[in-house]
Length: 80
Image 1 (cartoon, rainbow, N blue to C red):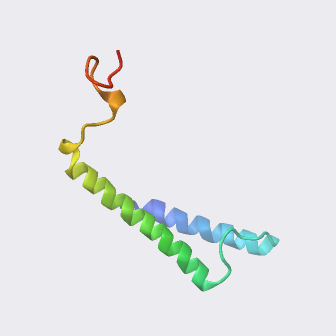
Image 2: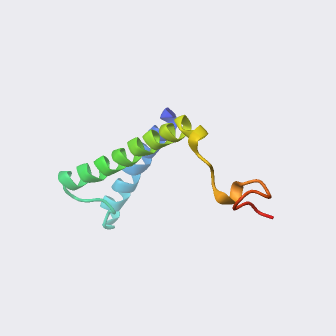
Image 3: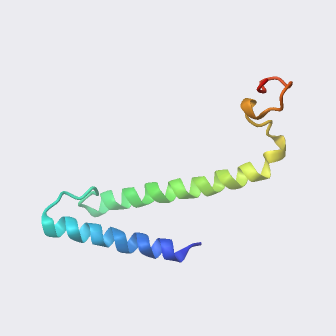
């Protein structure tokens, strides 16, 4: 896990939020806790599913025929 990227993301989010508050710019985030929790849970779910799918794809790669455009010339679907 790259902690530098996580820390940079947190610092950047606080800086953007502070700037939006100071200059009166409407923030692109919900102003209530339930909305912020929804955004957090959606982001967490996206990250977890991405990790799960990437791991499952690696485990089952031998069963995958691949993309039709990746087939060798002369095989069905391959470039000629």
